Length: 403
Image 1 (spheres, rainbow, N blue to C red):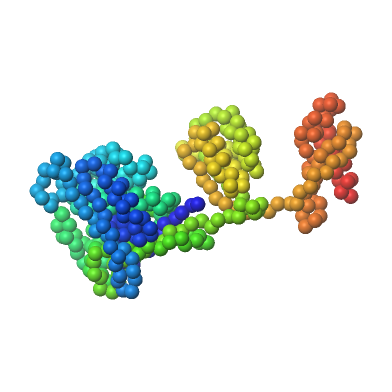
Image 2 (cartoon, helix red, strand yellow):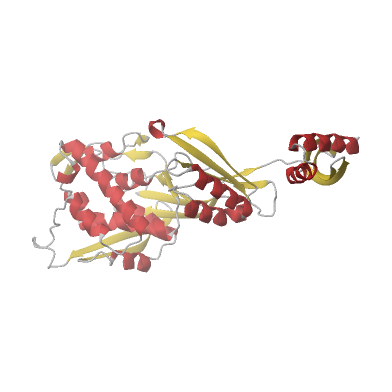
């Protein structure tokens, strides 16, 4: 079942607030801490507390970090500065699920790119300072692991609040929000609020903008769970709150013949014969229909659009065939409804023998008659005539039977 996670920010968005909201949705801290412990060389853990504020109840977390002495040659309490290569090595060589590693690295890469643009350098030369500290590693990896545990497919968020005034960063006094945060939020909607605090941190902005893949709340979807994540600040007129809503696509009634699953994919690096073989296998496996169309892809490369129509409960079978028999890396999918004529098979006597004819009725009235091609082809071969002649003869016979 497809799932979307939607964030609404009342009082900001930081890494620990995102973690708090995800834990409040149902992720067990013990499961999360087991994943964080797989980052060798560090003792990273999350402690969750129940918290109430402004009449709302939820979760607030504390991230505990400690770097082993073998890996940390800095003074006690000081976080070792790391660059993107260091963090990529740390995450890439962990036993975390592939999707979690990919998402975590994408967040850090986006964060490095934003900091590089602000400071006039390259991502590889960015020293992350506070955003690269162990608590940020725990926030980012932990949030991506939570999405994995919650089986989230897509993420979206409403406009984020921005405070005013100035903030203190490693490089000095900066306007609020921090320059890195502003760079990360380019292209996204924000709203100004009367709070003299940093409400959205670089880590929070990097997580939400990197994972974002839904522009608007998905109408008609079902709310499965709501989580409230609280931050550490005491704001003037609002709770330091981030709400996470877990939504699921509405279930289709699999027995409803009007419900149809549509699977589509673009293919540009395989031979037509292989695509043709795949189409035939899809039809044999029970697809209502499978067809192709020629398309122009990036850089005007010729490609093939494969479309499959099937019952929703055959989705897994169709995907297995598509991924095993083609070179595609992804398949688009959606449920749709279809309107069909009432169908009836009759047999019509022609000078070439009995031919089955498919009759289509609309509100009980016959509106179309289609001879079965296989019957026409067999009769044409028997009588040594063209298939077209048999087909047209069967059409006439069918119309005569219908009056």
